[in-house]
Length: 325
Image 1: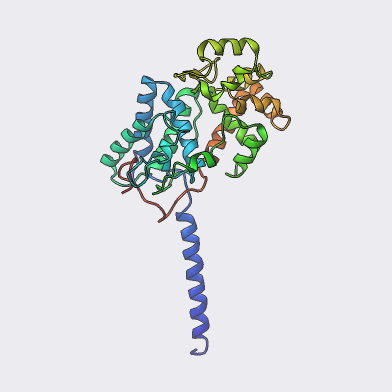
Image 2: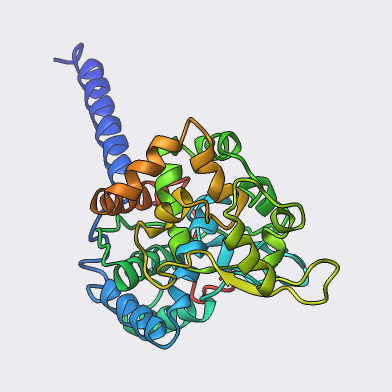
């Protein structure tokens, strides 16, 4: 009996370790309904807040979806894009020139957070609020609904210089885009699918003006002529905005791809998706099969929402989304 005790103790110790690792893997993964017991009204509170904001300003939906994308591509989906600059960190992500002044919807996230803190103090992360808000925006303006796995924790670091290093630019060609999305674990088809978010929202003229100065042969001439009436030639003291999708500018749908087929993509990074042989068939498929694109969009949003997330005991649950605790 005594001779076998050390062996038995080792087996028990090993079993406990395996169970502990298994339990940790479970608790640190995202799951649908993460707040079902700790804050059952969490998703409803966010949805009501988003619906109210979008009803007043439909453009907020595009802003919230874009903000979620910008959050996930820099340091993962950790709410770092929401952190304000401080004297010790004068240029946070949100104040990098790529995000400021173009990112919109911060006040919606803050309003939802305030309500959640009143209902369930320090329970729901800002990263999850943003993921819920992006989904609710897609539902409100596109009828696209999907379950959002949650359980993200909030990051404590936000560095403005990391934004241009991680986000694709408006001048990217298809190969650049495929490569950039691949670094985040997203496929070429997911990249083309997520680009459909450009069926809502706006862009500053400076993001595509070079296509107008020297006529871009991939742009429909009549479309270019129309844009020239809205965008002053450089140098200019103003930088007007124009809609990304002229067909249904406030509806998240596959009309964006129809625009590309008609050579009315606004950005180089839009029209390249049709011009490139590696992505052309994906564009044509999305243009022809809207319901299939919507299903893929939902799946791609869930996948994107899992990029480098903080879970378990990593990060924190902020009390205010603009500042660390």
